[in-house]
Image (cartoon, rainbow, N blue to C red; front, side, top):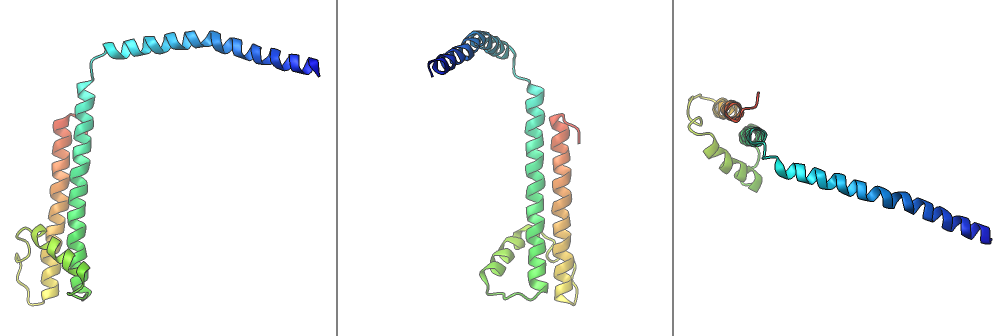
Length: 145
């Protein structure tokens, strides 16, 4: 039993010694790494490209959300959803301003077809405009497509 206790104590001390000797080296490497990092100026090109990429992604998402709202309005109207339902009213209220002049672009005898054409064109418009805007932002930001 005493041997086991001694062996355990000896094993613990053996494992502790290498760790304590490795620690100063690791600390020295970390300190050197921190010193090097502090000396380097920020990479403005990378930051600009990253910011342009984020802004371009946000623009694409906004265009997609606008198009989804317009398509949802088309589906609700063509599907004859209850116009007094709060979801239908909310989507209609959001889709009106997003149609930006497309709502009466074509006058067609069938009201559902007219809505499909006009609001469908508005949805396509938002997808195209957001894609073009995202591409311009990425180009100005210095990153490729």
